[in-house]
Length: 326
Image (cartoon, rainbow, N blue to C red; front, side):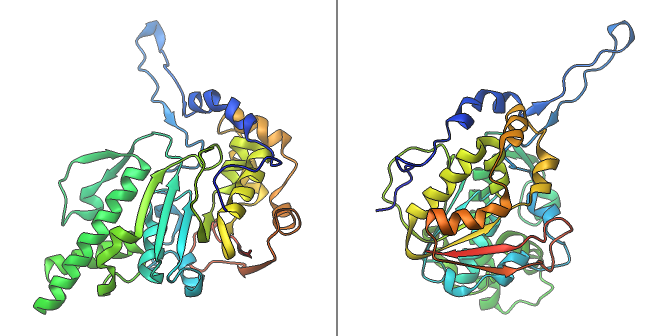
């Protein structure tokens, strides 16, 4: 039976756990700065996202000229339709919701470490048709749940507009058309989405360090642009723990979809915290070794690379996506 508890023989993530205090201290950089005679203003602290939990991540990752996340265009329906799915590192939940909307998942859970930092969403800029013009402070999982609620509202508006045969230039419909690609990354006009709250859920969780026993099992597990951050924060032990937990959580015949960052990306982010710097210098399992480990050590029976380049992704994010079969 699959469980979220690491196996007895699997390396622990202890090294990363010991560095938790350092990671928290490194979440913010900068400090006070004084000018001549002590009259200088304090320097504004720069927020550092040590887990890759960036605000507005999808905004600079995806070309704004495309109508949906380019990764969803290359995913196969058979991996998700009527399947129980898990999205590790879901961020604001846009891909999670998009997968459910486009491929009709039976269930999908999005988890994120969501370190407690607050992200600012300018509701006027994004969704001025529906919301108060104030700036609202939300964490990642809170934002994911907000996006889920908004998805439901957009669907209701679409259904009402269809029934009323309103013209395409009506205010509510125009707002729907503008917001839908950003929220759902998929077709929200289909009436089958009335039970989206029963399909999608979000949970704050440190997937690597979580030691709670669980009987959860999944048909498909997605891990997109997350491995680097686990590797930098928990080292080689952390990446092995990740792979073993995924294996145990997958049902026989299950699918693991991974978008690993290249080593050059590690190098660019190695100074994000003291822990990341230390781990970067001791990492032995580079990303180009992941495939060998997953097949020969973890036990996946096959792998396919579904793309070598993503059309619609901005430069630096057109990474290969690997699909492993249990």
